[in-house]
Image (tube, rainbow, N blue to C red; front, side):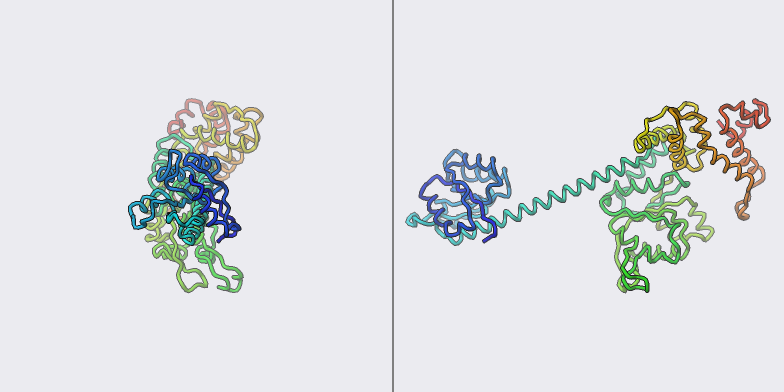
Length: 490
Protein backbone atom coordinates (compact mmCIF):
# COMPACT_ATOMS: atom_id res chain seq x y z
CA UNK A 1 0.00 0.00 0.00
CA UNK A 2 2.60 2.55 1.13
CA UNK A 3 6.23 2.70 2.33
CA UNK A 4 5.12 4.23 5.65
CA UNK A 5 2.70 2.63 8.06
CA UNK A 6 -0.78 4.13 8.03
CA UNK A 7 -1.58 5.30 11.57
CA UNK A 8 -5.12 4.37 12.56
CA UNK A 9 -7.48 5.41 15.36
CA UNK A 10 -10.46 3.10 15.96
CA UNK A 11 -13.55 4.63 17.57
CA UNK A 12 -15.90 1.75 18.43
CA UNK A 13 -17.93 0.85 21.54
CA UNK A 14 -18.65 -2.81 20.71
CA UNK A 15 -15.85 -5.27 21.57
CA UNK A 16 -16.79 -7.74 18.86
CA UNK A 17 -16.76 -4.94 16.23
CA UNK A 18 -13.30 -3.88 17.41
CA UNK A 19 -12.22 -7.50 17.02
CA UNK A 20 -13.67 -7.70 13.50
CA UNK A 21 -11.84 -4.53 12.45
CA UNK A 22 -8.56 -5.77 13.96
CA UNK A 23 -8.90 -9.17 12.26
CA UNK A 24 -9.57 -7.53 8.92
CA UNK A 25 -6.48 -5.34 9.22
CA UNK A 26 -4.15 -7.93 10.79
CA UNK A 27 -2.84 -9.45 7.52
CA UNK A 28 -1.57 -5.98 6.59
CA UNK A 29 0.01 -5.02 9.93
CA UNK A 30 3.35 -4.38 8.18
CA UNK A 31 1.59 -1.44 6.48
CA UNK A 32 -1.11 -0.55 9.01
CA UNK A 33 -0.63 0.51 12.61
CA UNK A 34 -3.60 0.68 15.02
CA UNK A 35 -2.27 3.41 17.29
CA UNK A 36 -5.31 3.78 19.60
CA UNK A 37 -8.77 2.37 20.29
CA UNK A 38 -11.41 4.44 22.12
CA UNK A 39 -15.05 3.67 22.89
CA UNK A 40 -16.73 7.11 22.93
CA UNK A 41 -17.06 10.18 20.77
CA UNK A 42 -15.76 12.50 23.50
CA UNK A 43 -12.66 10.34 24.05
CA UNK A 44 -12.04 10.32 20.30
CA UNK A 45 -12.28 14.11 20.07
CA UNK A 46 -10.05 14.59 23.10
CA UNK A 47 -7.30 12.30 21.81
CA UNK A 48 -7.40 13.91 18.36
CA UNK A 49 -7.16 17.41 19.82
CA UNK A 50 -4.19 16.35 21.93
CA UNK A 51 -2.17 14.66 19.17
CA UNK A 52 -3.69 15.15 15.68
CA UNK A 53 -0.39 14.24 13.97
CA UNK A 54 -0.47 10.77 15.57
CA UNK A 55 -3.18 9.59 13.17
CA UNK A 56 -3.84 9.43 9.44
CA UNK A 57 -7.16 7.58 9.26
CA UNK A 58 -9.98 7.35 11.80
CA UNK A 59 -12.29 4.33 11.60
CA UNK A 60 -15.47 5.55 13.23
CA UNK A 61 -18.70 3.83 14.29
CA UNK A 62 -21.43 6.24 13.20
CA UNK A 63 -23.62 5.57 16.26
CA UNK A 64 -20.86 5.68 18.86
CA UNK A 65 -21.70 6.34 22.50
CA UNK A 66 -20.39 9.25 24.56
CA UNK A 67 -22.77 12.16 23.87
CA UNK A 68 -21.29 13.22 20.53
CA UNK A 69 -21.53 11.06 17.42
CA UNK A 70 -22.35 10.95 13.73
CA UNK A 71 -22.17 14.10 11.62
CA UNK A 72 -21.47 16.28 14.66
CA UNK A 73 -18.42 14.20 15.67
CA UNK A 74 -17.12 14.11 12.09
CA UNK A 75 -17.40 17.92 11.84
CA UNK A 76 -15.62 18.48 15.17
CA UNK A 77 -12.73 16.20 14.16
CA UNK A 78 -12.40 18.06 10.84
CA UNK A 79 -12.21 21.35 12.71
CA UNK A 80 -9.15 20.02 14.56
CA UNK A 81 -7.39 18.85 11.38
CA UNK A 82 -9.14 18.94 8.02
CA UNK A 83 -6.60 16.50 6.54
CA UNK A 84 -7.59 13.67 8.94
CA UNK A 85 -9.54 11.07 6.97
CA UNK A 86 -12.64 9.45 8.45
CA UNK A 87 -14.06 6.08 7.42
CA UNK A 88 -17.53 5.32 8.72
CA UNK A 89 -18.78 1.83 9.55
CA UNK A 90 -22.38 1.46 10.67
CA UNK A 91 -25.33 -0.91 10.91
CA UNK A 92 -27.43 1.81 9.26
CA UNK A 93 -26.09 1.06 5.77
CA UNK A 94 -27.56 -2.36 5.18
CA UNK A 95 -29.62 -0.70 2.46
CA UNK A 96 -26.88 1.18 0.59
CA UNK A 97 -29.35 2.83 -1.79
CA UNK A 98 -30.00 5.49 0.90
CA UNK A 99 -28.46 8.34 -1.12
CA UNK A 100 -29.57 11.05 1.28
CA UNK A 101 -27.71 9.39 4.17
CA UNK A 102 -24.62 8.82 2.03
CA UNK A 103 -24.65 12.43 0.83
CA UNK A 104 -24.91 13.69 4.41
CA UNK A 105 -21.84 11.65 5.44
CA UNK A 106 -19.70 12.84 2.56
CA UNK A 107 -20.70 16.49 3.06
CA UNK A 108 -19.78 16.29 6.73
CA UNK A 109 -16.25 15.16 5.84
CA UNK A 110 -16.25 11.34 5.70
CA UNK A 111 -14.14 9.89 2.91
CA UNK A 112 -15.91 6.48 2.77
CA UNK A 113 -18.61 4.51 4.55
CA UNK A 114 -19.40 0.80 4.79
CA UNK A 115 -21.69 -1.58 6.64
CA UNK A 116 -21.04 -3.80 9.66
CA UNK A 117 -23.75 -6.15 8.52
CA UNK A 118 -24.48 -8.98 8.15
CA UNK A 119 -24.06 -9.86 11.83
CA UNK A 120 -23.34 -13.52 11.12
CA UNK A 121 -19.92 -12.60 9.77
CA UNK A 122 -18.27 -12.50 13.17
CA UNK A 123 -14.56 -12.45 12.33
CA UNK A 124 -14.22 -9.78 9.61
CA UNK A 125 -15.71 -6.53 8.37
CA UNK A 126 -18.20 -6.97 5.54
CA UNK A 127 -16.66 -6.05 2.15
CA UNK A 128 -13.04 -6.26 3.46
CA UNK A 129 -11.45 -5.47 0.09
CA UNK A 130 -13.41 -2.22 -0.28
CA UNK A 131 -12.64 -1.43 3.36
CA UNK A 132 -8.88 -1.86 2.88
CA UNK A 133 -8.88 0.10 -0.39
CA UNK A 134 -10.80 2.87 1.35
CA UNK A 135 -8.08 3.08 4.03
CA UNK A 136 -5.35 3.28 1.39
CA UNK A 137 -7.24 5.94 -0.61
CA UNK A 138 -7.95 7.91 2.55
CA UNK A 139 -4.27 7.87 3.50
CA UNK A 140 -3.18 9.05 0.04
CA UNK A 141 -5.78 11.81 0.17
CA UNK A 142 -4.41 12.97 3.52
CA UNK A 143 -0.85 12.99 2.16
CA UNK A 144 -1.94 15.09 -0.81
CA UNK A 145 -3.74 17.54 1.46
CA UNK A 146 -0.72 17.78 3.76
CA UNK A 147 1.57 18.37 0.78
CA UNK A 148 -0.79 21.02 -0.58
CA UNK A 149 -0.92 22.71 2.83
CA UNK A 150 2.89 22.67 2.99
CA UNK A 151 3.17 24.19 -0.48
CA UNK A 152 0.62 26.86 0.41
CA UNK A 153 2.50 27.57 3.63
CA UNK A 154 5.83 27.83 1.78
CA UNK A 155 4.24 30.03 -0.87
CA UNK A 156 2.71 32.31 1.76
CA UNK A 157 6.01 32.37 3.62
CA UNK A 158 7.88 33.33 0.42
CA UNK A 159 5.28 35.96 -0.47
CA UNK A 160 5.46 37.37 3.04
CA UNK A 161 9.24 37.56 2.80
CA UNK A 162 9.03 39.29 -0.59
CA UNK A 163 6.44 41.75 0.72
CA UNK A 164 8.69 42.51 3.69
CA UNK A 165 11.62 43.08 1.31
CA UNK A 166 9.48 45.44 -0.75
CA UNK A 167 8.40 47.28 2.38
CA UNK A 168 12.09 47.62 3.29
CA UNK A 169 12.92 49.01 -0.16
CA UNK A 170 10.17 51.64 0.07
CA UNK A 171 11.07 52.53 3.65
CA UNK A 172 14.69 53.00 2.64
CA UNK A 173 13.75 55.16 -0.34
CA UNK A 174 11.07 57.44 1.01
CA UNK A 175 9.70 60.40 -0.91
CA UNK A 176 10.37 63.24 1.54
CA UNK A 177 8.39 66.47 1.55
CA UNK A 178 5.16 68.16 2.60
CA UNK A 179 4.89 70.76 -0.18
CA UNK A 180 1.94 70.76 -2.56
CA UNK A 181 4.28 69.65 -5.38
CA UNK A 182 5.43 66.55 -3.48
CA UNK A 183 1.88 65.73 -2.39
CA UNK A 184 0.82 65.91 -6.03
CA UNK A 185 3.57 63.43 -6.97
CA UNK A 186 2.36 61.04 -4.25
CA UNK A 187 -1.17 61.42 -5.64
CA UNK A 188 -0.02 60.56 -9.17
CA UNK A 189 1.91 57.52 -7.90
CA UNK A 190 -1.18 56.24 -6.07
CA UNK A 191 -3.29 56.67 -9.21
CA UNK A 192 -0.80 55.40 -11.81
CA UNK A 193 0.95 52.54 -10.00
CA UNK A 194 -1.65 49.88 -10.92
CA UNK A 195 -2.42 51.25 -14.38
CA UNK A 196 -0.77 49.07 -17.01
CA UNK A 197 0.21 52.03 -19.17
CA UNK A 198 3.57 53.57 -20.05
CA UNK A 199 4.65 56.49 -17.88
CA UNK A 200 7.09 59.30 -18.67
CA UNK A 201 8.80 61.02 -15.73
CA UNK A 202 10.34 64.40 -16.46
CA UNK A 203 12.50 66.73 -14.41
CA UNK A 204 16.01 68.09 -14.00
CA UNK A 205 18.95 65.86 -13.08
CA UNK A 206 18.98 64.93 -9.42
CA UNK A 207 15.28 65.52 -8.75
CA UNK A 208 14.53 61.85 -8.00
CA UNK A 209 13.07 60.39 -11.19
CA UNK A 210 14.33 56.88 -10.44
CA UNK A 211 12.92 57.18 -6.91
CA UNK A 212 9.46 57.87 -8.32
CA UNK A 213 9.81 54.98 -10.80
CA UNK A 214 10.75 52.67 -7.92
CA UNK A 215 7.60 53.62 -6.01
CA UNK A 216 5.44 53.19 -9.12
CA UNK A 217 6.70 49.62 -9.53
CA UNK A 218 6.75 48.46 -5.91
CA UNK A 219 3.28 49.84 -5.18
CA UNK A 220 1.80 48.10 -8.22
CA UNK A 221 0.42 44.61 -8.78
CA UNK A 222 3.69 43.86 -10.58
CA UNK A 223 5.71 44.49 -7.41
CA UNK A 224 6.72 40.82 -7.04
CA UNK A 225 8.06 40.76 -10.62
CA UNK A 226 11.37 42.19 -11.83
CA UNK A 227 12.12 45.91 -11.86
CA UNK A 228 14.86 46.36 -14.48
CA UNK A 229 16.66 49.69 -14.66
CA UNK A 230 18.51 50.75 -17.81
CA UNK A 231 20.65 53.85 -18.26
CA UNK A 232 20.01 54.54 -21.95
CA UNK A 233 22.93 56.97 -22.21
CA UNK A 234 25.33 54.14 -21.33
CA UNK A 235 24.16 51.77 -24.12
CA UNK A 236 26.17 52.18 -27.36
CA UNK A 237 23.99 52.22 -30.46
CA UNK A 238 25.77 49.13 -31.85
CA UNK A 239 24.82 47.10 -28.75
CA UNK A 240 21.20 48.24 -28.49
CA UNK A 241 19.60 45.10 -29.96
CA UNK A 242 21.72 42.61 -28.01
CA UNK A 243 21.25 44.50 -24.72
CA UNK A 244 17.52 45.16 -25.09
CA UNK A 245 16.41 42.01 -26.92
CA UNK A 246 19.15 39.49 -26.07
CA UNK A 247 20.59 36.72 -28.24
CA UNK A 248 20.81 32.94 -28.44
CA UNK A 249 23.91 30.79 -28.07
CA UNK A 250 25.87 30.76 -31.34
CA UNK A 251 23.95 33.72 -32.79
CA UNK A 252 27.31 35.29 -33.67
CA UNK A 253 31.00 34.45 -33.24
CA UNK A 254 31.42 35.46 -29.59
CA UNK A 255 27.97 34.26 -28.44
CA UNK A 256 29.20 31.30 -26.39
CA UNK A 257 26.16 31.55 -24.13
CA UNK A 258 22.67 32.91 -24.68
CA UNK A 259 21.72 36.22 -23.09
CA UNK A 260 18.40 37.57 -21.84
CA UNK A 261 17.76 41.12 -22.99
CA UNK A 262 16.27 43.84 -20.81
CA UNK A 263 12.75 43.22 -22.17
CA UNK A 264 12.92 39.51 -21.40
CA UNK A 265 14.30 40.18 -17.91
CA UNK A 266 11.42 42.56 -17.23
CA UNK A 267 8.71 40.28 -18.67
CA UNK A 268 5.56 40.55 -16.48
CA UNK A 269 7.35 43.35 -14.58
CA UNK A 270 8.62 46.87 -15.22
CA UNK A 271 11.38 48.19 -17.48
CA UNK A 272 12.67 51.60 -16.40
CA UNK A 273 14.39 53.53 -19.21
CA UNK A 274 16.40 56.28 -17.58
CA UNK A 275 17.72 59.10 -19.81
CA UNK A 276 15.53 57.85 -22.67
CA UNK A 277 16.17 61.13 -24.51
CA UNK A 278 19.76 60.01 -25.14
CA UNK A 279 18.74 57.15 -27.46
CA UNK A 280 19.75 57.54 -31.08
CA UNK A 281 17.05 57.75 -33.77
CA UNK A 282 18.03 54.24 -34.89
CA UNK A 283 17.58 52.87 -31.37
CA UNK A 284 14.32 54.80 -30.99
CA UNK A 285 12.96 53.08 -34.10
CA UNK A 286 13.76 49.59 -32.75
CA UNK A 287 12.32 50.43 -29.34
CA UNK A 288 9.12 51.73 -30.93
CA UNK A 289 8.68 48.52 -32.94
CA UNK A 290 8.95 46.41 -29.77
CA UNK A 291 6.47 48.62 -27.91
CA UNK A 292 3.93 48.55 -30.72
CA UNK A 293 4.00 44.79 -31.28
CA UNK A 294 4.73 43.58 -27.74
CA UNK A 295 7.25 41.22 -29.35
CA UNK A 296 11.02 41.19 -29.52
CA UNK A 297 13.33 39.85 -32.21
CA UNK A 298 15.95 37.94 -30.24
CA UNK A 299 19.18 37.74 -32.20
CA UNK A 300 19.65 34.18 -33.51
CA UNK A 301 16.02 33.17 -32.97
CA UNK A 302 13.68 33.00 -35.94
CA UNK A 303 10.48 33.09 -33.92
CA UNK A 304 9.51 36.33 -32.20
CA UNK A 305 9.28 36.38 -28.41
CA UNK A 306 6.14 37.78 -26.78
CA UNK A 307 6.69 40.00 -23.72
CA UNK A 308 4.35 41.76 -21.30
CA UNK A 309 6.36 44.65 -19.90
CA UNK A 310 5.29 48.03 -18.56
CA UNK A 311 7.63 50.84 -19.59
CA UNK A 312 8.49 53.71 -17.29
CA UNK A 313 10.79 56.28 -18.91
CA UNK A 314 12.62 59.28 -17.50
CA UNK A 315 14.45 62.21 -19.01
CA UNK A 316 15.86 65.61 -18.07
CA UNK A 317 15.43 66.77 -21.64
CA UNK A 318 12.50 68.50 -23.32
CA UNK A 319 11.30 65.66 -25.56
CA UNK A 320 8.55 67.78 -27.08
CA UNK A 321 11.19 70.30 -28.22
CA UNK A 322 13.39 67.44 -29.47
CA UNK A 323 10.45 66.18 -31.55
CA UNK A 324 10.20 69.63 -33.20
CA UNK A 325 13.94 69.49 -33.90
CA UNK A 326 13.61 65.96 -35.39
CA UNK A 327 15.88 64.57 -32.67
CA UNK A 328 13.21 62.36 -31.12
CA UNK A 329 10.53 60.34 -32.87
CA UNK A 330 7.07 61.80 -32.40
CA UNK A 331 5.36 58.38 -32.47
CA UNK A 332 7.72 57.06 -29.77
CA UNK A 333 7.16 60.19 -27.68
CA UNK A 334 3.40 59.62 -27.72
CA UNK A 335 3.90 55.92 -26.97
CA UNK A 336 6.06 56.66 -23.90
CA UNK A 337 4.10 59.69 -22.69
CA UNK A 338 0.70 58.07 -22.12
CA UNK A 339 0.89 59.17 -18.47
CA UNK A 340 3.22 61.87 -17.21
CA UNK A 341 4.73 62.85 -13.89
CA UNK A 342 6.82 66.01 -13.70
CA UNK A 343 9.18 66.40 -10.76
CA UNK A 344 9.87 70.04 -9.88
CA UNK A 345 13.35 71.36 -9.20
CA UNK A 346 14.26 71.61 -5.51
CA UNK A 347 14.40 75.42 -5.73
CA UNK A 348 10.68 75.31 -6.66
CA UNK A 349 9.66 73.70 -3.36
CA UNK A 350 12.16 75.10 -0.88
CA UNK A 351 9.88 74.36 2.08
CA UNK A 352 11.00 70.71 1.75
CA UNK A 353 14.74 71.45 2.03
CA UNK A 354 14.87 71.39 5.85
CA UNK A 355 12.97 68.09 5.91
CA UNK A 356 15.39 66.58 3.38
CA UNK A 357 18.43 67.75 5.35
CA UNK A 358 17.06 66.17 8.54
CA UNK A 359 16.22 62.94 6.69
CA UNK A 360 19.68 62.61 5.11
CA UNK A 361 21.38 63.46 8.41
CA UNK A 362 19.51 60.67 10.22
CA UNK A 363 20.13 58.24 7.37
CA UNK A 364 23.89 58.82 7.21
CA UNK A 365 24.31 58.99 10.99
CA UNK A 366 22.78 55.52 11.17
CA UNK A 367 24.86 54.16 8.28
CA UNK A 368 28.17 55.55 9.58
CA UNK A 369 27.35 55.08 13.28
CA UNK A 370 27.83 58.81 13.99
CA UNK A 371 25.98 60.73 16.67
CA UNK A 372 23.62 63.19 15.03
CA UNK A 373 25.16 66.68 15.20
CA UNK A 374 23.33 69.93 15.72
CA UNK A 375 22.87 72.10 12.65
CA UNK A 376 22.79 75.85 13.12
CA UNK A 377 19.76 77.90 12.11
CA UNK A 378 22.08 80.05 10.02
CA UNK A 379 23.10 77.05 7.94
CA UNK A 380 19.52 75.84 7.61
CA UNK A 381 18.34 79.29 6.49
CA UNK A 382 21.27 79.54 4.09
CA UNK A 383 20.48 76.20 2.47
CA UNK A 384 16.77 76.98 2.30
CA UNK A 385 17.54 80.07 0.20
CA UNK A 386 20.21 78.30 -1.87
CA UNK A 387 19.44 77.52 -5.55
CA UNK A 388 20.11 73.80 -5.80
CA UNK A 389 20.87 73.31 -9.48
CA UNK A 390 21.98 69.76 -8.69
CA UNK A 391 18.67 69.32 -6.84
CA UNK A 392 18.12 66.62 -4.22
CA UNK A 393 21.17 64.61 -5.31
CA UNK A 394 23.42 67.64 -4.72
CA UNK A 395 21.82 68.29 -1.32
CA UNK A 396 22.20 64.64 -0.33
CA UNK A 397 25.91 64.58 -1.20
CA UNK A 398 26.52 67.87 0.58
CA UNK A 399 24.87 66.62 3.79
CA UNK A 400 27.18 63.60 3.81
CA UNK A 401 30.28 65.76 3.31
CA UNK A 402 29.23 68.12 6.11
CA UNK A 403 28.52 65.20 8.44
CA UNK A 404 31.98 63.74 7.91
CA UNK A 405 33.72 67.12 8.35
CA UNK A 406 31.75 68.47 11.33
CA UNK A 407 33.04 68.54 14.90
CA UNK A 408 29.92 68.54 17.03
CA UNK A 409 27.97 71.09 14.99
CA UNK A 410 27.32 71.85 11.34
CA UNK A 411 27.96 75.59 11.11
CA UNK A 412 28.65 78.06 8.27
CA UNK A 413 32.36 77.32 8.35
CA UNK A 414 31.68 73.66 7.60
CA UNK A 415 29.06 74.61 4.99
CA UNK A 416 31.45 76.98 3.15
CA UNK A 417 34.21 74.37 3.19
CA UNK A 418 31.88 71.81 1.59
CA UNK A 419 30.63 74.34 -0.98
CA UNK A 420 34.11 75.53 -1.97
CA UNK A 421 34.49 73.29 -5.05
CA UNK A 422 30.99 74.11 -6.21
CA UNK A 423 31.58 77.86 -5.96
CA UNK A 424 34.92 77.60 -7.76
CA UNK A 425 33.19 75.73 -10.59
CA UNK A 426 30.60 78.50 -10.77
CA UNK A 427 33.29 81.15 -11.25
CA UNK A 428 34.95 79.00 -13.92
CA UNK A 429 31.64 78.99 -15.81
CA UNK A 430 31.74 82.79 -15.93
CA UNK A 431 35.25 82.68 -17.39
CA UNK A 432 34.40 80.09 -20.05
CA UNK A 433 31.12 81.16 -21.59
CA UNK A 434 30.26 78.94 -24.54
CA UNK A 435 27.52 79.43 -27.12
CA UNK A 436 26.63 76.13 -28.78
CA UNK A 437 24.56 77.61 -31.60
CA UNK A 438 22.03 80.19 -32.67
CA UNK A 439 19.31 78.57 -30.58
CA UNK A 440 21.30 79.21 -27.38
CA UNK A 441 21.73 82.97 -27.94
CA UNK A 442 19.84 85.10 -25.41
CA UNK A 443 19.01 88.80 -25.66
CA UNK A 444 21.88 90.76 -24.12
CA UNK A 445 19.77 92.16 -21.27
CA UNK A 446 18.57 88.69 -20.29
CA UNK A 447 22.07 87.24 -20.49
CA UNK A 448 23.40 90.13 -18.40
CA UNK A 449 20.68 89.61 -15.78
CA UNK A 450 21.40 85.84 -15.61
CA UNK A 451 25.12 86.55 -15.20
CA UNK A 452 24.56 89.13 -12.45
CA UNK A 453 22.19 86.84 -10.55
CA UNK A 454 24.57 83.85 -10.69
CA UNK A 455 27.56 85.99 -9.78
CA UNK A 456 25.81 87.66 -6.83
CA UNK A 457 24.51 84.28 -5.64
CA UNK A 458 28.01 82.76 -5.74
CA UNK A 459 29.67 85.67 -3.92
CA UNK A 460 26.84 85.99 -1.41
CA UNK A 461 27.19 82.32 -0.45
CA UNK A 462 30.77 82.96 0.75
CA UNK A 463 29.73 85.38 3.49
CA UNK A 464 27.56 85.27 6.58
CA UNK A 465 25.91 88.68 6.12
CA UNK A 466 24.82 90.84 3.20
CA UNK A 467 26.89 93.69 4.66
CA UNK A 468 30.07 91.65 4.15
CA UNK A 469 28.99 90.68 0.62
CA UNK A 470 28.27 94.33 -0.30
CA UNK A 471 31.67 95.38 1.06
CA UNK A 472 33.56 92.86 -1.12
CA UNK A 473 31.47 93.82 -4.16
CA UNK A 474 32.32 97.47 -3.55
CA UNK A 475 28.73 98.54 -3.06
CA UNK A 476 26.85 100.46 -0.39
CA UNK A 477 24.61 98.23 1.68
CA UNK A 478 21.46 100.07 0.52
CA UNK A 479 22.46 99.71 -3.14
CA UNK A 480 23.19 96.01 -2.62
CA UNK A 481 19.72 95.51 -1.12
CA UNK A 482 18.16 97.23 -4.14
CA UNK A 483 20.18 94.91 -6.40
CA UNK A 484 18.93 91.85 -4.51
CA UNK A 485 15.35 93.03 -4.90
CA UNK A 486 15.88 93.69 -8.59
CA UNK A 487 17.27 90.16 -9.06
CA UNK A 488 14.42 88.60 -7.01
CA UNK A 489 16.59 87.43 -4.11
CA UNK A 490 15.05 87.04 -0.68
